[in-house]
Length: 215
Image (cartoon, rainbow, N blue to C red; front, side, top):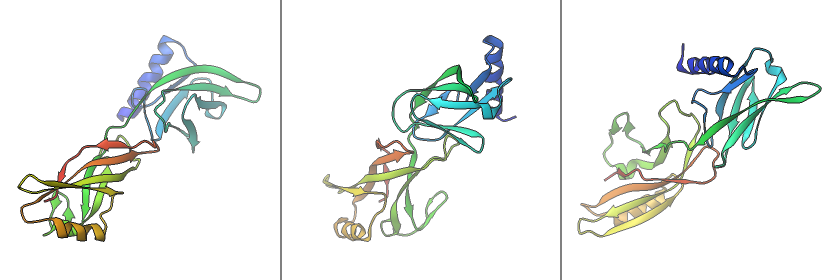
């Protein structure tokens, strides 16, 4: 039995044992919903059929996709799901369940370059091979995309002087590569940091400080 199924069954049993509800609505994250992504919502009932049930939310949206419910909230406002029994005569309120809205953890960030293999870079000159940066989630929390909209490259000289270049987007253009080749000297270090990232449908970007040294 998977942890998701076990959590849902326990929630169902607790709700019916303690308060005798007709319907239990829950998810596998202990009633936590993450902003910006589709959160699966489960329900079970002894008396109401799925086609007779309507799920709505005070904020965000709920969609029914092939019999499965998903909740999405693209803002930072807390939300509650209000459950209605749907029939031809009335939409009787059955229950309301408060879900906590949380921000997803920061995604991981890495470089994209020819010569990249599992375990690191295997090429000869990363400044020539690099073509951008990317973000990703490596766990089961979400398969929703994240998008890098900008980052900073810092070139530092052994004397202590440095130069910062802000890059819009996630790609390093051929013009920028030519500029880097003209200003980077032997002994200089090149660091990528301060990634501006958008996660899911949340419009506000977040700043992720994940230092990557490429030279």
